[in-house]
Image 1: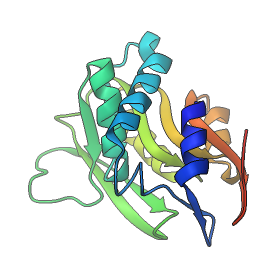
Image 2: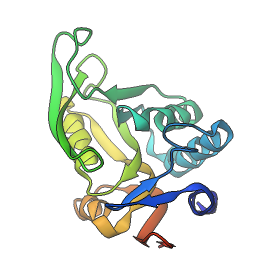
Image 3: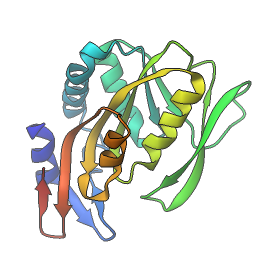
Image 4: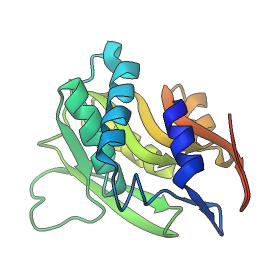
Length: 189
């Protein structure tokens, strides 16, 4: 998606440790017009996949998932990073390592919201090493649901997570794939 690449070049900032800051339009402050365009593109890519649910992980992926869900007309479920008192009954869990925060989370989804028969699209803001998507994939399999693919706003191709998922047969569609980045440049695939 050329619009995503242009937005990253205009407003993104590379931080030490291989972090791409896009807080001005995608994470902390959300450009709602651009968000709608992201949702439309993700819906276009997966319109033929008969998606019945979108699954993401809190918190940065929620807005993007909702935009895609609105365009596809399907519910959005998000995995919580910690089991809280409002998550009761049967649940699916997976341990996920966060590259950005360098910590492990046990993500959880109630079995009320993810079930056999669902055709699930994973949506997230970033794909780096793929740990979050692997955790979400595990939840889909635990539910007996069908994974139809993953829609990602920004993939850091140089970190290999997308390639690993594709090698496992997962359809991954990223709106921008970064092959390399430094303080002074970003190269897209």
